[in-house]
Structure formats: structure tokens, C-alpha cells
Image 1 (cartoon, rainbow, N blue to C red):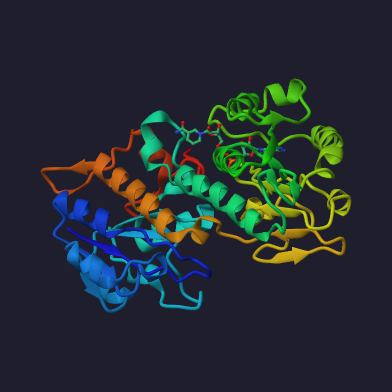
Image 2: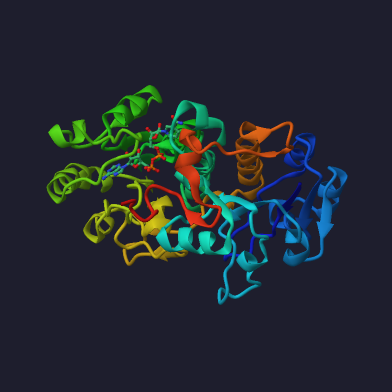
Length: 385
Ligand code: NAD
């Protein structure tokens, strides 16, 4: 069986779905060939030669890479007709297994089914212990949280740690992290390592304990609603307007005293909750920095412009860049590629030297959008009579 790795063509995508390390291991599973499109790794610092050394064939374009492929590895969804590049989806052979962060929705699931492509949307992976090593959202969010703090430090014209010098003392930066999931917890840890004075908020009770265990102080509103804010899947529920109002009351005064605010709050399948209003930003001191990692989902800050840095009239910088893992591409690709390798290795049939995805497996049911020309995902499949 042949496996194809394509160059990512979507805007600002710097990652790649396989590295020389994972190519070697993929070939070790018994694949007949791994074809990597030329230039696929360049934005992550991986030249064609490194893939070739690992045993891959370098294909001159997407069509050549995909010809005869039984498995296709991607970071983002393949381009379709009219998306400003080759129609990658049409080039994927019927019956092939496509694995990536596919931006799963009903229309996408139908498109894969119509093309006869079996599509695994890794962003839908269940958050269970067995799936941790293939969890692309966690590996990427972790790096995003780290990178957000590093970029905040670079954009901040003062220092994170308290600096006591012969010329006097520079105070430590006050850092407030909103949303303490995978990205937020890494942001807390990184900000503390840099010497910031860190506080954080979240709605899930488990997050409050995790904030404290990292040595940060919790700031936030708690009530009956927040005590039940975690879904069985481990995500936050959408909170009521009343809760968000009370939360805003508690954090408004706090935000005014912060030098750095990192926002990471997400609610699965929805636009990001707005947690920082224009008034709150107006009350911050000039030179303060906000990093809104939730910009891909619309942003947690009212003034965020996704993809851009905004400097407000009162001198607050708001970094609303999108694709934060893509801003640390070599590390993000390394972890993402290992996640995909683990997924394939977990469902590998050694005799057939091909993947075997059992229908009744919780992970398979979680990620598979389409199989054998049918939409199979419970969230998107037409209801059975
Ligand atoms: P996420 O990216 O969906 O959300 C980020 C954070 O925003 C979450 O902590 C959420 O509670 C918070 N949030 C949502 N609305 C908010 C609001 N109004 N105010 C403040 N914060 C708000 O979440 P995530 O980082 O992907 O992970 C969520 C949970 O899943 C965590 O508990 C994590 O430990 C768990 N998890 C488990 C596994 C596993 O067991 N395999 C893997 C990954 C994550």
C-alpha cells in the first residue's frame, strides 16, 4: 500500500503531516511506499532530501503524490474545486483513507462520501486515555499556549520577571490566563517559568484545581452553573448570558491591573465566548498586551481582528493571529506527525499491511466521517428510520 503526504496549501499553514522520523516508522509498518510532495516540509524546516534519506519518494506535485495512494496524510482539509489550487480532493483515489484536521461538518462529510474517500477527522477524537497519544488538539494546543506567552513577552516592552538591578527594580509582569484547558495550562506554566505573576480563570471546576497546582491563583465567578460546567467529554458547556455577566463583573477590575492577558477559552462546535469587552480593554494600561489564541474561533476579545495585531487608542496591543501551532511549525509538525503515526499503528493489520478500522471502536466511531461512500459519523449521518 502507498501512503501520500501533501504540501499544505491553505493560507498560513506551515505544518506538515509527516516528518522523516515518522516516514521511517510508517515504512516499518510494511507500507509499500511513502510519497511526499516536493516542498511539503520546507515551512517546518524539513528539506526534501531529509524525507528521501528516510526512505520516501519525492513527488513533483499533488497529482503524482496521490496517484495510487491508499492512505493520505494531511494537516488541514484537502483543497476542493474553486479553492484556489489543485482540486486535491478529486485527485485522492476512491477507497483511500484520508487523515487530518478536516474541519468536520455535514457538508464536508457528504463531500468525502460522494468522492468515495474514507475520511478520519482527527479533531473529533474522543478525549479518552487510550486516545491521548493520537490527540492532535492536545499536542497542538500545548504548543499554542507556549508560543502565545513567548510572543506576548516579545510584544511587551517591559520584562516578565522582577529584575533587581543596580539602577533600580523592574516589577514582575501581571499575567492573566483566561481558559485553563490544554493551551491555558501550558500558558500558565510558561508565564511562570518566565517569572510573571500569574492568575487564571476557567468555568470547569477541575480547571480551578489544575490552575492552583501550577502555582497560579484562581480568579473567577463560581456558582451552581459552573459546578456543572464540564460535559462528559471533558469540554466546557456553553455558559448562560447571566453567568457570563457575573464572570465579567469579577474579572473586569482584575483585567485593568494586568500587563499581559492570554485568552484561550473555547466551547466545542461554537464560536468562542466573548470574555473581554471593549470597555475592559479601554481600562488597561498603555503597553499591555493581549494574546487571543481563540481568534480562529472568532476570538475571546471584542476587539480581536482574526489574523492581525491591533493597537488600540489607549496603546494596548491585541495579537489575534490565527493558527498558533503553525507559528511554531517544526515542533508542531513533529508532534502532529507522531499523533497520526500512532493512530495508524493502533489500527494496523500486520498481515494485510493496511489499516483496519473496526466499526465498533470508540475512537473510530469518533473520528470517521465517511466510509465506503456513506456518511457514517453519528453527528452528520442521516438519521436511520
Ligand atoms: P478547549 O480548547 O475546548 O477549551 C479551552 C478552555 O476554555 C477549557 O478549559 C474550557 O473550560 C475553557 N472555557 C470555556 N468557556 C469558558 C468561559 N466562559 N470562561 C472561561 N473559560 C472557558 O478545551 P481543551 O483544552 O481541549 O480541553 C478541555 C478538557 O479536556 C481539559 O480538562 C483537558 O484536561 C481534557 N482533556 C482530556 C484528554 C484525555 O483524557 N485524553 C485530552 C485532552 C484534554
